[in-house]
Image (cartoon, rainbow over all chains, first blue to last red; front, side, top):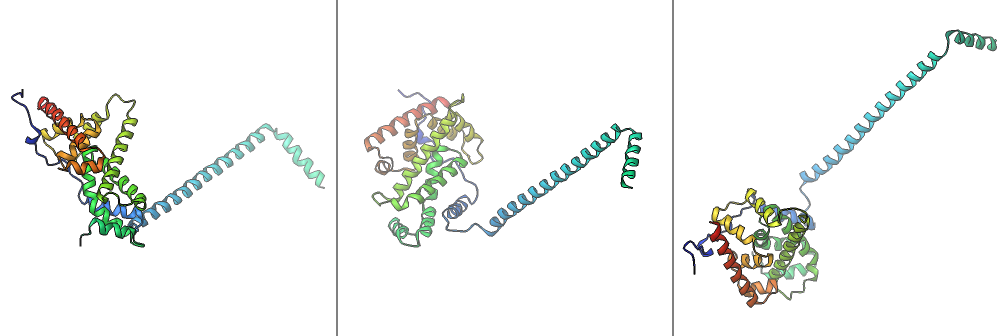
Length: 107
Length: 182
């Protein structure tokens, strides 16, 4: 026995309650054309890919040079500190001796 | 000028015309196949993915198409298989989740900006989602597309009798579900 509020699906609007983005089907056909090689991608799109590549390359170069200059700076600082440390370990008198001895041997 | 399926098939087999003819095929069938898929996956983005896979599969397999069935039937079969594969993959991805795939689909549907149904239509979609996948497909093809059982038999490879029984049961379940919902 049917209840009072039984709903038949024939009473419901059969229209599909879905939509698609504007121009979806035109763009979809173009996308498939590109994938099967029937159409080259638009110049703008190709240029964009090349621009991305070029930008990536430049980015890598810039980062590389940045890291290299930081490395060089640190290396120079380390060398300078090492030199200062060594000099600090040598007594002034022995340095004078060294230079004097050196001068005598040259004569 | 609109091509017939037979003319299109001849062009697809002719040397040097394949890609152009395939573009015509896409133009001819994309909308029908899109809606066939969309009714199953519900969300636009998913339907777009499955439709792309369908045409790529068709492109790769067109040389092997012998013409035993109609071109449209062959395409519908590919679209149906791709849809089932997509849903199976989704199910696998969600194997550890507390939510069933149908719950996720319903959540995505209500959030989808390309869903514009009213309360009753949402209840209908919810009820359709409670059906097993194959029954859902049968219901959609009959109820929304108005395909004949013979056409459905060609596409799905299921006998007319079984399709009729499946639709009848689906209809009963959906009406029961909607009656309780609204």
